[in-house]
Length: 331
Image: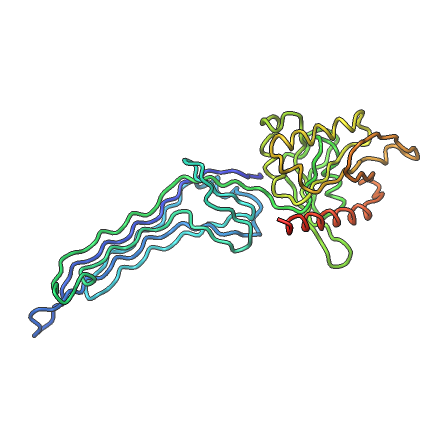
């Protein structure tokens, strides 16, 4: 099961309190203060892991609480700090405070860490308050409370190319032919119910990641169909490919509808480099379909079933990614 949104509760550990103690030994009538400082509470830390593809593990457990720090002790012994809790999340995870809506961070790189709940600081013992004029202090501090909050984890998959199209436009078939991915393929709409990723090898030493996103329908930007579950994943792709069935009765209107839904969700999506791919051209046999499609985008007909023009498509897609890289450098 593909899970791309969860809400969990995290609570860091409290800091240990400081200690009031004085040194005691035979023949030493008045020992000085030797109360140790309390240990810090454990923190809750998120770390990016490229091996993960979903937030499914967090559906089984929704609360994470770190241990408190130990109290300080005599003989200037500081309390032991509570252990941190490390939570692994897939790359592309956006972290948000569930109550305030504040974005806490964005995990996009392998090994990247983010502290979402910081452990409380340990309180000082009386040894820390000793001065030349105050040699027998009895002051000490209570450990600070650790942070606690409800957080939302939202996964937005990271890919170089995102395949956009209406249901049954041939996205899964194309992904299966260009990569080793094995998405579900059938002759009915809404076959794909979750994003699929695959790595496309290009030439000898080059490759890029392609994402097959569930089919887009009119009103998706308002939550219809798979709605935002689909659109949130398009935000992270570097370039877009609009897939249109070559047998579509009105391909121009289909392209317009696809772009309209993307623009309503986020105008920035329309600024991404893009091209149009006409699929299922093998259905026409030797005929040359007269497809009227007025657009500034490059248009390329293919057949994923027969393999016609798939090698040329890889070249076009790689050029599209390079264009996206140039745009990112400009910013």
